Amino acid sequence: MPASTIERLQVACEEDLVRVRQRVRTMAAEIGLSLVNQTKIVTAASELARNMLKYGGGGETEFERVERNGLIGLQLTFRDSGPGIENIEMAMTDGYTTGGGMGLGLSGSKRLVNDFAIQSAPGQGTTVTVIRWK
Image (tube, rainbow, N blue to C red; front, side):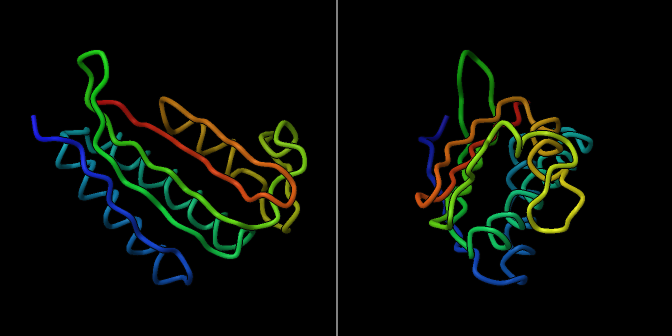
């Protein structure tokens, strides 16, 4: 298997969200995710990238093909330098929003992937890492 390479895309505007979705779709297909799982990871990526743009003022998305314990997956990391999340537990609750949306972005994204990790603190930005395994 080839060595893993991390690709990066800056997210600074709506057009960048399209590029994130396109790259995730391509990579998910390349590693052999089913169409259903491709759709799940693309949807999660779209939500997380949109949150990064809306609440964090933009940031960077990393894409990486990963292998662990004989499994192949697609790992995505969304990193911003925005205001951070004051209460992660509340932010992960369905319906919780500080921006007038439906409040399903973080919690919905978590349900669409196999692994989900979030790190954030007020004034320190937010990093969300997700993996969808084949």
